[in-house]
Image 1 (cartoon, rainbow, N blue to C red):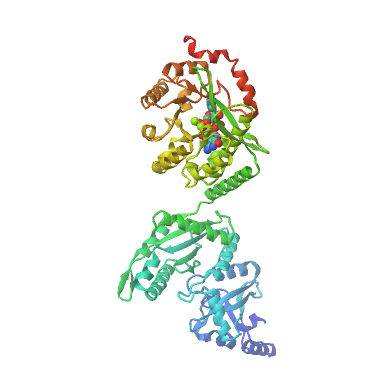
Image 2 (image 1 turned 120 degrees about the vertical axis):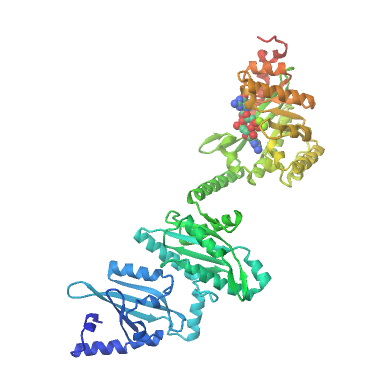
Length: 578
Ligand code: C2E
Ligand code: MG
Ligand code: MG
């Protein structure tokens, strides 16, 4: 092929041959000028596309490429490849004059004149469907939605990749939006599928008009569409898009109104693969649905990254339970009047292979309100029951208090599982196991909590309210919950000697607990002065670093011996205040 000769009249042998080749070639040939306007097409082209030379002379060939009419990424890509490399080969879907779309392969080359300036383009359009009509139809069905004529998911997947490549090469932005019509099922139910189909077509046409040159719209499901937007998008754009969708559509004499929910992710800020981008846009769309529909939501990659980290941490904690990396430490609870050790609280630790012994603050927030709290709780209950068996053998008779998270307590199976676990340890008296529940546990669903607690009480288990005073409904809970101990939160105890407000809270809690005839225990008792003040206020039960820090089970026996030597604590009740 020697395109510059086409500019000249047929004047010699070479030109005659060229002309013959051009006119008799099997492949469709298109020649355009430097501005990409058609100057020549050959009969093979007319045969293939139905367009006569006069139909298209002076027009750009966009009209023959896949998304030529309203959204043509390929055309843009072709231009870009040509500019850079002088040639380009790309799969296209061209539109026949009768409107049908067919697959083809287009090979374009820029032709320069003697001065080195771009003078022409020569394109060869190979028909990928020289194949029977039926097969052509099949290929069309493979890539396009029959109802709307829009690209389907299969083609969209390729188009996203092309768009991403283009955006990468040109340092541009791409918005991937999934659009789902709200309550479309109802439209089908009420008006029938035929009206539903007409509505979908009209809907897609309306959206098409909101798109710019390179934008692409695809239909990927019944009432689900995807837009690839190459122009900058902002809130105003989405507001206008939704407003356009809300305008009534006239369908067979009826005025119907739709709304849609839109999920958006922005590439390359969201630097994911094509299919993941679509998934992210979908996630955002579900958020828009959750937020009441008829709105849009933009996917936040940073938030998603944090969620992933969270999930990995959760998985790691799940493994920790399975790999037996958890430990229980025990903190004694004493009666400061008598010096008697009345029980211990089981406090979980994670013996992390690399990070050492982790306290609950390092991992409980990660599993909060997930099913892992149930797994953890069951592990703790089982470990505490085993410990009771072990201590029984060592003649240590200390009830163990176990912290139960709200999620665990409110789990349907809680009381049944507890009964089964107790049955696994028949040598343990249920009275040796106590459960500490946070006020918030009951706050969430007090009726369910009451039911579970009643069942557990029937098994012989008693309850304490933990961190009392930190919730919103302390009084209600004190009145309604069947608890045999109220634990005054350590945050009030810690500063009660210096902070008048905290002292007032501690006094009030003790006063109320006495009025309701509920025993109480002060947490966070760090000094003898705290202890004296609490005894004076009428709260003799205590737990805190001043008495003992939480310790591994093996340390309990030596501590119990040592405790008998702690004169200053054992004589507290009888000593006058300093
Ligand atoms: P909590 O149930 O109120 O436990 C008391 C916490 O206060 C423990 O922290 C204990 O070490 C600490 N503590 C005790 N005395 C003092 C003191 O005098 N001063 C100070 N500053 N702190 C004191 P830990 O072991 O870090 O536990 C923190 C929280 O984690 C617990 O608060 C409880 O809500 C939760 N937790 C611990 N173990 C478990 C468990 O097995 N299951 C569940 N669901 N939660 C647990
Ligand atoms: Mg506790
Ligand atoms: Mg507490």
